[in-house]
Image (cartoon, rainbow, N blue to C red):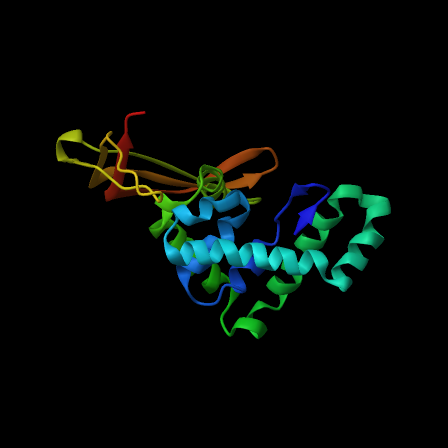
Amino acid sequence: MQGAGKSFVMNYLAHIFLSGSNRKVQLGNFVGDAVKGSSYKNYPPDIAKGIQLHRAIDDYTDHHPAVCEVVHRLQPEFGRYSGVLLDIYFDYLLASRFESFSGVSLRRYTRTFYLSLLINYRYLPLRFKRFIWHFKAQNRTSVVRISGSCSKEQMMPLLYESPDGKVSDIPLWEGGNATGTIELYRRIGGSLELIDRLQFENGLCAYQRS
């Protein structure tokens, strides 16, 4: 949904859900707001399809008489944020009754989508890469801290192809030998209480010189 000359897309869940079961279409619909103009053509076909679907959904809702009426009613008090509030409310309604619409629990659905995001991480716009890390690392009640390291001698240099078809001349070093710790904290007031600390090994490492 658009708002006062600036694009606001808050109803991520609705966009993902309306994408059907194709994971790359879901991904494109999820990031659609960050892909401008014809640059969607630089992405794989299914992701590009999702980006175009995102735009079609926005266009439909922006011009739907019922949506326009509600936005008009909200504007005297909330101004340009009226569309944002309505987007959030749409997602709230979908989330609160999600299983009745989808046949699966919201938790299961979102976990599967998070996994899909990680698998297709290289296609995400920078803004969404930052968003996903923040969203997975902490929430209102808890914080997860991960610390690990890899031995460069056990990593492999790779040249990868970006969504626009360009091959980087700077190698991406990858390895599966990371070791480190995962710490889980509970928020209590303004402080954090350590709940558990786990050791891990054989984790994924990736490094690229800028």
